[in-house]
Length: 227
Image 1 (cartoon, rainbow, N blue to C red):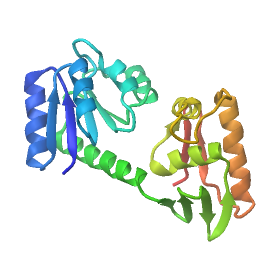
Image 2: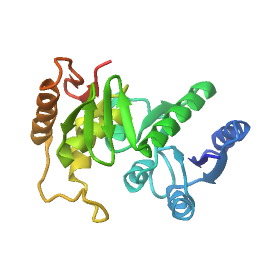
Image 3: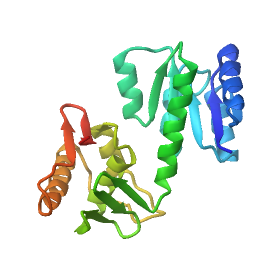
């Protein structure tokens, strides 16, 4: 049973979401402030967070930056494009404005849980691409492409969300993140220019095997896989 944390200080909205999720047989835990949410995240293995932004104490925006490796769907009354872009660029996975359609909310939850399950898979595939997450080798039409560690990280993010645009901000933040518990530890500072170089290198390696294009640039935003 998937465990979902609701972080919402409006009791009526909170209870509405809680009832909906319980009917779908999700395990639900509740927090009414950002601080309470942090305490619950430390004590529970949570599969997904539903997060309001305007919270007492620790704000939703601050909470996003502290949550690692758990999908976050923001549910907020803030409707401006700027708010949405900022929240998604800082690490949220999806954004729904209030008032929301319950069926849409459930559909988006299923999508994020499915993507998170894919993160645990040994391989990721899209069309005729297959990425082995142990060997870091990319296969296209059974031909091998050897990737650098950074190229692998970029392509993995694209394959994890093949229908979505991965922002340049998200990718550069990922490349600059240092984690001493694995081999992804870097001293080089990455920016949008170095990101473009790595994307170009991936494209060149793919073109050595096929003329098909796989990575699409979305001007001013980021990159996605061609549909």
